[in-house]
Amino acid sequence: MSVKLEITLDTKQFQAVMDKAPARFRKAIIDGLRRGSEVVAKKAKQNLQRGTTATGSLRASIWYKIDERNLVSFIGPGMVRKSSKTFGDPANYGFFVEFGRKPGGFPPRAPIKAWTQKVLGLSGADLNRVSRAIQAKIAHKGVDPNPYLVPALTDSMSKVIKAFNRQIEIAAAEIDNEATR
Image 1: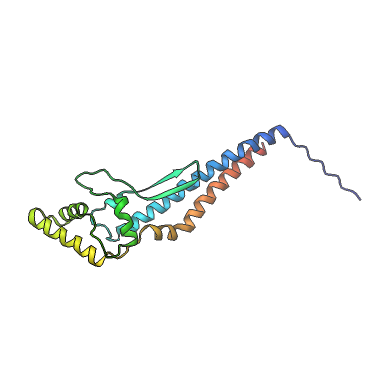
Image 2: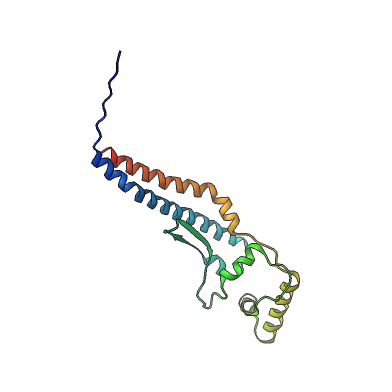
């Protein structure tokens, strides 16, 4: 008994599909990074709603950027325009919210003064006295960490992987559909 199997392959069509595959998968990777980054950024903002920030400027500054050339995502606090609602650079103090600050050295007074004015409503001599006292306390006792970004990533990992895998599956299905036409 013998079995004969003959397969005919349109090599031009196959090659055309294979030529498009890397670009499709690259797009899927970028889409997966984008969707995963959205999940982590949203969770980080939720983590900051636990009362860790008085003004909300750090929470409002959470963003992500996809580096399409290197296929990597950057997620974290960014610059916020100064206005009546914001002060300082969240990218600067976001690090200290996440990881804390050990005692030693005085922190910059301008952001503390702006925070004291905005949150406590102080002005004049009271503003100067209280902002200097806060500055001294931070210098002598430090600040406990209040993680928001690292837990966002670890808590969201399964959703990030699922979103990423879904984009790869979509690209594979598109390539398969095109190849079987």
